[in-house]
Image (cartoon, rainbow, N blue to C red; front, side, top):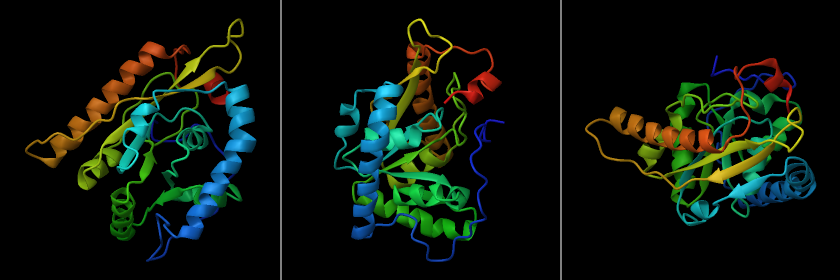
Length: 254
């Protein structure tokens, strides 16, 4: 199913969030630590692995920089195990938050790194959603960016843009902020088609809400416009082709 991860990591421990949990931690010391961790990831992981091994290209970052002082939700297709780290590094020096499954906090060691690097758990307890949305609005009002994966599930090396969940687009309308789409596409290695492809991250122009009679129509319109734009770009520039997006070959690539 499209809303289930294909890629499995270390089994996580159960996590319970209590009332008053700070979803978007804005403590200055926490933010400094978060930025420092991202810098270390950029220096010791992004440069040697991302740039040298995966040959990452970043295109049209100007579309992100145009909204430097404005809060926005960034969306991206979720097709590589490391794309959250790579996206975070691509958007430096902006210290971007990213949403994640609450269960990710329970992954030994990595859960703490995710959290310090700006990971924000989406609460499974509906009683905490009010606090989550208030915190979300607070950081957007301060001009921060939040990365959301609208496909919800990670499917490594998937060769299509999958169906989007409503969350990111409902939040964009609730908080009156634009959506900045990022599309990850694959470039084949010359003469080595069996090897893992290179990665390209392209920032598309921001999309804004349009007024309709109902909120449902507004969400659907914004979601479909963003999805169509990302799909057109992906189909035009992606070089990796696959008959079955859930094939075992795609699952084993890294």
